[in-house]
Length: 482
Image (tube, rainbow, N blue to C red; front, side, top):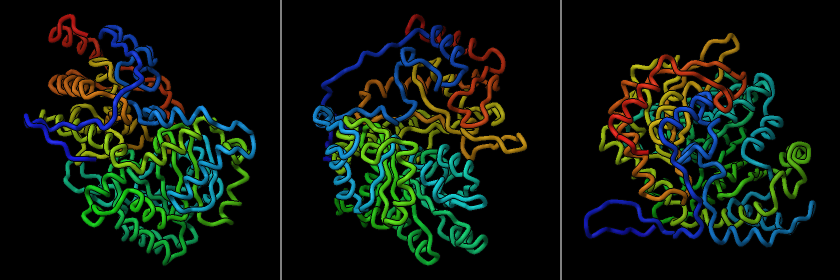
């Protein structure tokens, strides 16, 4: 992205696109927001979109498409088998990643299902820099276990380290020595660690992990769902890569991997997903699960219109102006909150701005799900919907005891090319107000707790009347303002 300086001294990101299609938003009054939060069981996943002003729940499937993507959707070949539309996608994936064997799927977790069913066996281990909720669930359901071996720096909430998502290579060697290479199903790297602040991995760390895999005959699998942001960070934070193009960096990453899978709801700004596989024999082991779970091999559960849009979106991911918008907006939000004293994860990562709830609500114990409580409180105070990424997103141990997360985060996702800067400033203002009134916020407790992926559809209630007190304080400070 071109560097643009403002004569007045402002330091704000400049959008390298213009808005041509708009969608009307609604900001209900705070009393209606309290009612909506209660009806949703204080779970932001269960809020109705009509009750949400800024939807910062996720960047999955809600990124703005380009004019070229929308145009491409109109020329789709809707053949069930042998679609020319799929051939375009296959060719684009081979061009970008260089892996020959391609399997389409309806989204990232569908790819994880295929990977786990084929590669994970009872008692096997999957080392990774950090887990994602659905990834871990698929591995556990197939009898495996996850070993998180992120570097110690990855869990430092306040830092200037540029690549906090890196794997601890010495710990990987230690796992091999302890369990044996035959017990390791595969090694998984997540390019942009979702649950610890969207922190990127470095190219150098991936090279080192590849070397360990080569020494012990291990498969290296890359979750590339958040690759777009990670590419920008490698380009701008690694001096050795500043003169490389985004395509060059992408290919260097891909050349190190045996399997690359992704959610197109993130990578490519469409709705779908896919696996890119180096080895034909492994491809053939996975191939049969696509028609079983997803659809035929040339659509994999995706709409052919989405496949056309994805093909264009993947090509646009190689454009610095496109992939920089999200990280620059996130960095702006993080920097502005830091100026106000609000505790956030630094340095700014990809995907979104992450509030450090352990410092924000240091009076609320993890047993009362503070990140979920802050997500509910922020929605009530602002109409902004974020996502809990903490203990609520974990799953209980088999004996029923709670698994406390390493971090309690409120993630405020920044879908690409969706929000204006004034909307981001509004979110910053309401977070600042909530920070100054944080003592009013209390905890939550379950009233309905599903056994699997409880954060998606579990229901909770506030402990005490803290939400009513928050509404009263809002009215005292803002009067009749929305």
